[in-house]
Amino acid sequence: MNRLNRDQMAARVAQDIPDGAYVNLGIGLPTKVANYLPADKEIFLHSENGVLGMGPAPAPDEEDPELINAGKQPVTLLKGGSYFHHADSFAMMRSGRLDVCVLGAFQVSIYGDLANWSTGAPGAIPAVGGAMDLAIGARDVFVMMELLTKDGVSKLVAECSYPLTGLRCVSRVYTDLGVFEIGKDGARVIETIDGVSLDELRRLTGLPLEMAARARRPEQ
Amino acid sequence: MIDKIVSSFEAAVADIPDGATVMIGGFGTAGMPDELIDALIAHGARELTIVNNNAGNGETGLAALIKNKRVRKIICSFPRQTDSQHFDAAYHAGEIELELVPQGNLAARIHAAGNGLGAIFTPTGYGTELATGKETREIDGKHYVLEYPIRADFALIKAHKGDRWGNLVYRKTARNFGPIMAMAAECTIAQVSETVTLGTLDPEAIVTPGIFVQRVVRQEAK
Image 1 (cartoon, one colour):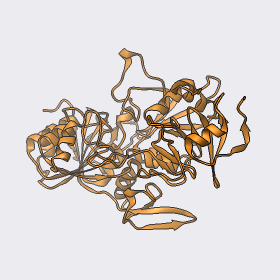
Image 2 (cartoon, one colour):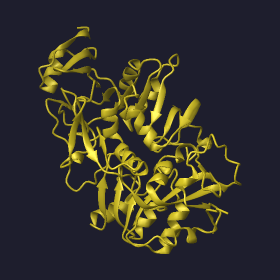
Image 3 (spheres, helix red, strand yellow):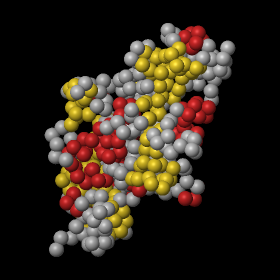
Image 4 (spheres, helix red, strand yellow):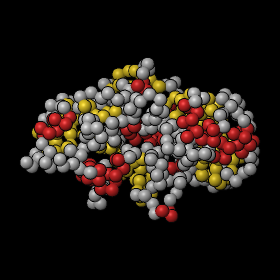
């Protein structure tokens, strides 16, 4: 079965980010999306620790410990970028000014419920960071994840079993086997990876999936 | 003459009592007021409630305060990190209480205290286990959770430059929680890389006006 690798997934997400968008890329896998943003578009990267107009990683000898992203990695600032305090930074999310955020997930339900902060494992130290604020704040929440766990269990589910991050907040799910759109009546397939059939996605997820009206049909 | 500049870190933290609630600025190590925390450790106050985004990184700053068993409770959003070993150990030993707050709610609750508000309704966390048992309300078709302000007795923050009236400017992403913590504490103590004479800071660019700051210590102070 064909499947996208993580860089290909990041490139696929990047295609759908429009010119002029204010975007937050979550810690981990979503940060790869920055590598594939097309040079002919101006896209503003936001980092919740207080920076808008974030640039790429600095050269190794030009790192500044006071200029970091939410993952605490050194970054740079583009011309026209700005710094602000945490209340302003989260105001940008909560008031709906961020166009897109891209997040990883443990599970997404077909109605757009997101679980990405805790597996609920006993004894584990809980940590949430800005995940819940991003989930309900950005106008479009894109989830980027492998469709299946390492054990082959679908992460797109009828109902999340892990603790929720946000309710009905995800608008699209980009996976290694297909792209899904979340509407009021549930998830629909808008794209399958070449060679993956709709029936195969139904079998893998155990969900009665349908193609969206504007879907790109897989080449059989 | 008003002069908020204090000559030593030791003097700056000398009246922080046992059991105080202390906000500590910084996101990871950016903006962490390490020298003030070292002085607080030397001063010896115990049973502290600490408010910070994290629960200490590595061996210095907040991590050292926890390692020295001065923290009874921590209010933060992201305690678990690869280098949070001292918090992890204290937590698993049952020596420290954790109040986990989503990062934006942490900022909003601190900001609410600084704004003199009684409470806020926030959409973040609605329907999740972090809102369990909390009052909710539907306003204009959206769901909100009632959250209360987080106030502190003291705030320890790090800024770039300050003057004797307590006006502050920050540097890059080290600003993070500094301005809102300064507003939410009874006594804000700022360590600065540089003290400047009154009138040097551009009034258009001052981020924290001196009314929110009680003490300023220069980084090179003893």
